[in-house]
Amino acid sequence: MPELPEVETVRRTLAPAVGGRISSVWTSGMGLHMARKPPAARLRKLVGATITAVRRHGKYLLLDTDHAMSLLIHLGMTGRVRIQAKAEPRASHTHVVLGLGERELRFSDARRFGQFDVVVRGQEREHPALALLGPDALDDALDAGALLATARTKRTTLKAFVLDQSVMAGVGNIYASEALWRAKLRPTTRTHKLTAVTAKRLAAAIREVLERALDNGGTTLSDFVDADGTAGENADYLWVYGRSGEPCLRCKTPIKRSVLQGRATFYCPTCQTP
DNA sequence: CCGGAGACCTGATAGC
DNA sequence: TGCTATCAGGTCTCCG
Image (cartoon, rainbow, N blue to C red; front, side, top):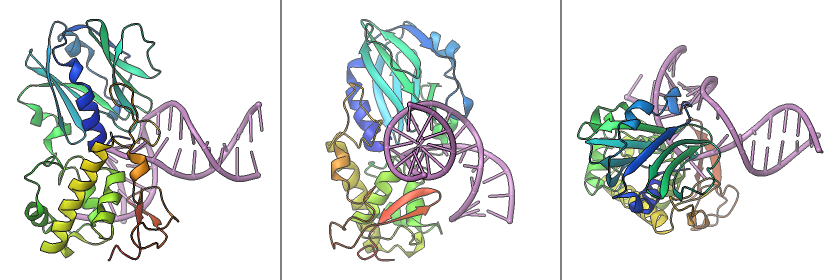
């Protein structure tokens, strides 16, 4: 579910957690991504800590505390972070609950591909999940020039390139197809074919696609909701993702679906030139 | 270095 | 109704 716009939407709706003091910690004991369990003992040391900020890098959330430790959260495919009243029933597949006054911060994840960990503030980069991340996809530094310079060091496809979290952090399978359609570039085109002109188009398209999705509160295909439980509207505005057989919104050619690296890929065979 | 396939999980949906 | 197969926003690892 969650790519940069969805995670950023969660980050923004987590604002009420800032200033909250962690009064209790509960974990389900079940393993998440790579069978890693949320570290119960380290989490319990955060009882008494106050959440001071909620940050995001790519698809990762970082909740800073005044105990020099931060919570690291990744939503995987079906992860949710909710702020709910203590009296609200817990969702199924709830794996972490932090008491925050009258409310609770709850992490649930049906498929358990998500991550919930603790990192030392200032040493985030030493966490294996964050060590290799490239600049955030909405970082101003990621302009056409930077994109082109990185692309020239690779021989991969454009689809794999924009999905590579070490190139840029935050683009996932939906927005990869969307951005390449917007930039009129074929997903299978090799990165070293990028030019100053097409790199500029791609950089602009990535930014546009992500910001537009963010304006719409993210894309909800089935699972995604923000910290308030609200679904996103962006599924109504997708240009190609999930639209195979339907007419291209630019040229009316039926949209094609193919599989690249095991992931569904959508493109217009006419106006996305190879 | 790169792509493909499979692994990790559960739930929704389609088809018989 | 119930069974089976397929698919899903992500990441990681093995293999050729």
